[in-house]
Image 1 (cartoon, rainbow, N blue to C red):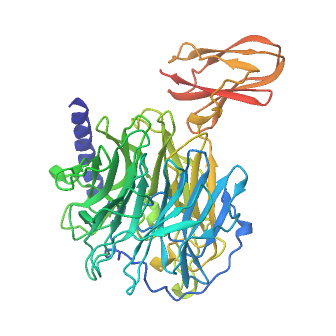
Image 2 (tube, rainbow, N blue to C red):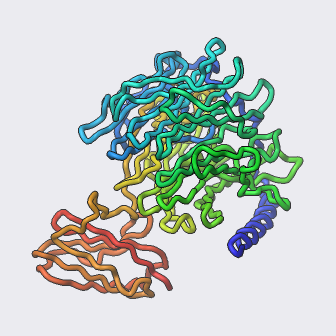
Image 3 (cartoon, rainbow, N blue to C red):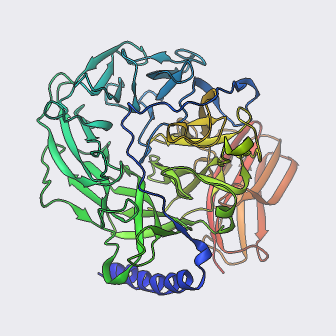
Length: 596
């Protein structure tokens, strides 16, 4: 109860503060465009010039897994397009447009210790053109399962589930789950596989012309996709936000989505979850939990369309989403520019703010594009120690693509992919790290480095695993933003500080040992001891939570035996730090806490 009161008091303070900020600085408020259409997958491709790009010249980091001209991957929640299986193999799927986007298919690739199944290209999964909006998962048997749709006025088999014949084989059996009655087609599927190999799918019904409200449904298969439960309508939405996630250590499955507070606009939503403790029993009438309760008591903070969720290895559900302040009615078409990246831990009932976008000048420079706020397409994953990792797309106010002649091309913001992590169940978060960090201001079509539509694997092992689009012209092409370019699909790994020095077998390197510092936590001074089994060149350094080196305590040759170093941190701010010892090609890292 005390924790909940703390959250409410904090929310009340923020409400007063930001209400004053909004009324005193209307330059921070932007008019919401007409509600964005929920494109159906059979949208007419805009007539635009094709600009060949040169993927071989890309600056953004990662392995080129494939390519697409269809830069867009999702309208709302990004979902999982990358999964790490129990053998540490990497499976990815994406929506690929080709031949100037006249064809669209779902593609797949897989990485084993010997390399990629189809290096640089991937292989086609879908049979009929028009397929897309894909997500992926792998169950206990490590077979990739791909979820996608094909919207067509003549084909009522709009939902598809493709199951690989074996691990990383690339030979898919394709199944057709139920999609409602004839003419009532559910599309935009998001899927998950639980530890019992049951397949769970949520999918959305396109909003009728002239409206923004639509419903979404749930289905399940217990036999690998051969048969399915009947369609169950879950709730009504104004965005494409609903996702499903399954625990790796229990039978729990959760559905998470943003539910409209006001069905006339898409920008005013709460965040809901529905939890099934056994993966089969659902209460879609009374089991919906609104944990944000936005709009209560005059609160003007609301969620939009992007969110993600994961169960950690302690079986706790974690949810991340973006939220922004919206002025009171009747100004329902306005929203506060500075979105917030938020986190919720079901076990404690606590909400925390991961990051606040501080830049208000950005909106006088260029547009982020449809369905995007300053934090977009967030994903969350966790490691075996239940440390949490969140990635998302954000923008730099000085990095915009060029504007074409006579308004033929509007400049859009070039994206980068950012990372935060938490080692205390989301109570506190690291400062953000720019994972892609490529700026191409005033770039021409085909020369941009706009990194977007990323997906983070839920499972984090010795590194995080990220899959994203390197868009060669900023903006989402199906939203008539930018032009047609060849865009690499990139796979990137990164080792954040919580994983530094982790070995596959968990063993300490045998040529030295590194002790825990003492005292810990400490005020100003602490001691670090290590032992060398033989004379070695050593490097003992301290890093902050961003990975930046803040001190080099020892560098040079040292004899075999036990050594002690004292660190005077009187000039260093309080916080969590990591100290790393490197010797003879090995390294190990430990964490310490400075409290002043």
